[in-house]
Each structure stands twice: as structure tokens, then as C-alpha cells.
Image 1 (cartoon, rainbow, N blue to C red):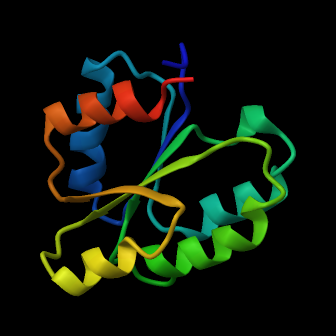
Image 2 (spheres, rainbow, N blue to C red; image 1 turned 120 degrees about the vertical axis):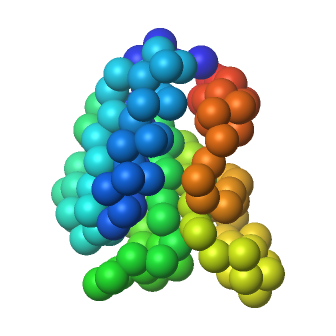
Image 3 (cartoon, rainbow, N blue to C red; image 1 turned 90 degrees about the vertical axis):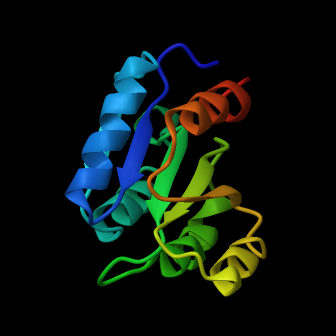
Length: 134
């Protein structure tokens, strides 16, 4: 696993972000940035697409958010992804148990996995061990 992965949590739910940060800290991940919506992280990716150090290793992306939801973020991300020289893992998170959301998420190759919130500690551990191996 990358020694010090940069993890972004894009979620409008402060409690979800807090729990994720605690779990990630327990798993020795210290480089964590939380965002209340997907506009700022999308702009950061667009502005820094050629700077791997500025880009996250993994993004935990909430599906249902105001302004730009998770699927809209992915569509915007696709426009810049081909210019990025770094593989960014995107994990979709949602409180929705709607099967259509899961099926829709599976149509995006950028989405590595999909979890119902709240994500479990063991799932985070597995994600870090599997997704961040280089």
C-alpha cells in the first residue's frame, strides 16, 4: 500500500465524514481531506490533473448530495480523467438501498466499489489493502 495515501471524502453529511476519518485514522491513514460537496474537489482535479502529488489516491464519494451529485461528479471527472497520469480509485457511498443506483454505479468504470453507508471498519480496511496496492 502507498505509504501515505491521500484520501478524499466527498460527503455533505458531517457525521459520515467524521466516522470515516476516525476509521481511517485507526487504519493509520493520516492524509485525509473532507469536502462538503463535489464542486471544490472537481475543480482541484481539473486544476491539478498534471500534478500527481495534489491528486488523491482514493475518493470516497457520496451519491446523494446537493449541487452536484455523485453521478454528476463522475461524468465531470471523466472529462479530465484521460489527462491524469495517476489511477484514482473512487468508492461510491450512499444511504440509498435503491438497486437502480447500484446498477447505475456499475456502468461507470471509474467506480471501483459501492457501499451502503455507514461503511464498516472492516470494509475500509479491505479497501485500503486491495485498492491502494501498487
